[in-house]
Length: 121
Image (cartoon, rainbow, N blue to C red; front, side):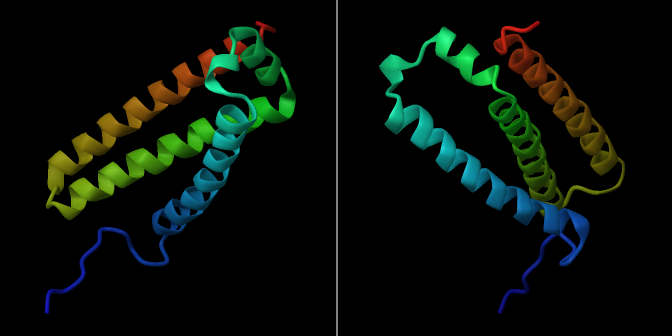
């Protein structure tokens, strides 16, 4: 029987955070779909409505938290998939650095868009 292998250290911090972010993302995605696809239909979504939602502190902070959480969860999953495929040594360090920089840029740009959507800046 094949032995199970994972680059996650069970009970390690990345293993734990991956599970916590998954639970958070499921909840926020449910909120997103209910709010923007069932309560308000796609044809009813306008820039002014988005600006109104994003200008509310609670909604804005939820969306920024969603951005950071989704970025970490996705990049951490990709990184661990690559490690599971045999990435190691210098290549592993280079990929980790590239993914870290890409994640930081993604979060920065997402935050810029989120703040622009508040209509306050």
